Length: 574
Image (cartoon, rainbow, N blue to C red; front, side, top):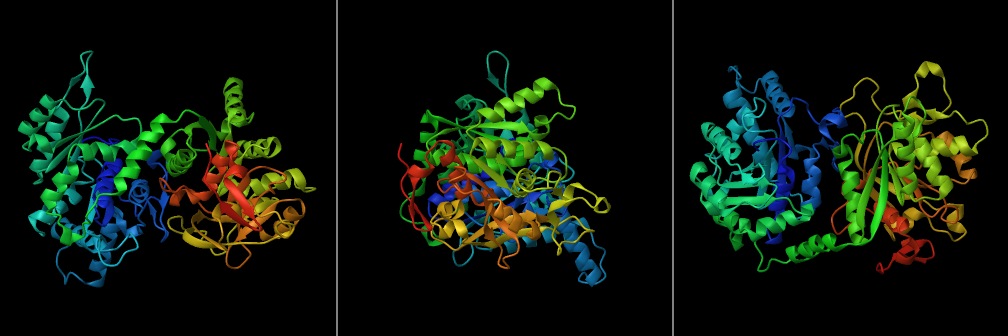
């Protein structure tokens, strides 16, 4: 790319969607040039959300875009960082693998990058047998960055390690529209391509982001000065929703360009018909025509940067699409819901938004800032019967809020995360005993794990749990985790006697995974220790989010039909 924030992740995901729709098996790799080993210890304000994979990898949020658009399951090795590469090289040097040679950036570091790409590109990510047909590689950052130079050099070498028909370089650039006449400026793209060529890389396709569709004269100018055919200059202009982007690329013949450059023939996996894009196009068009709105508040610590909750937003979006509703997200900074030094006007506005919401989500997070505001939001939803979903930290705070409200002598109960050990505070959430207390990176309970759906007194009285309803006829749920703290098992019996249901537990039966109120008490009040947002997909939304949206529009009972203790799905009526 030529500047950050252009949407390279959506662009590469859209290219992959096109290739997959033509019958090819596609995988993806993201290269992040920072020195961190992974994204696990980065601030959400600086980097956006950390996307968690099945194998516990804490990765860049673009891997979430790849998984959602392509419906694949990636591994931690599909996210390459400078930290990982240098660690691998230094480890080899310490083992003596370089036979006493002077270890240098070229060839040793670049060789490691190329070997990593070749190795990971062979991993099947779609559940099929054998390697994928195409591997998409996104290089983060911008052309000319010092941090990314080693990766661009590796790619320069890599193009000569494979056949010309096995390598295609796509450059994503910016064509700004300036002035009252709306003139499209090509200089940023020209300079970006000039910089790339000075590094030994010549783009085969130019994808140009702009607020308006590229004029034919702009395409021709870019073709002349960037030394690519004008037909290889592709416009990605502003559209109503991101699901139109693959359709934009399709209309401009990008699929044909890639087939020709990469010589993608039927013996490489192509099928007779392109079938998947029809339903995708129908979805993209339908979104633009929705009239009714569902308003969902996200009450969190990091609402100043909405990418901090990108997967939560996407999961809500997938569910609202299935419910045929426009999604309006009300972003509420949880610290604005309490009196602690907050401007009264700001506090009033935050509470106004909360009261106007059809449903509320309290997502994950770390640290004590804003916690009392989240608890206040949970209390409001419980008392007003507003549909509510708590995720990770949100689920833990549900237990704390309920203990404060319903258990004698627990008015000041809190989490061990928010107090010092020497304070000897009354806690309902404890540090998990197996977690390392000295190291931060990669030490949490991470990745996909089984949750067992449990029967309780409410089930035996004929009231199935929300969890068993939304997940259907299953005894286990496989979702992704990222946490160090858990609800204290010792307080669970008291909470259950007070009316809270713990309907999902880990394989030991001691770690709480899903908590909810009976539907006879509240229409939809559920929390999960896991992060269901990470497995949500367009046209296949995450069950907890799907249930939340249905409850928020008053369609939960109309959609689900009960059959004993098992939830039975029925089509959603308009």
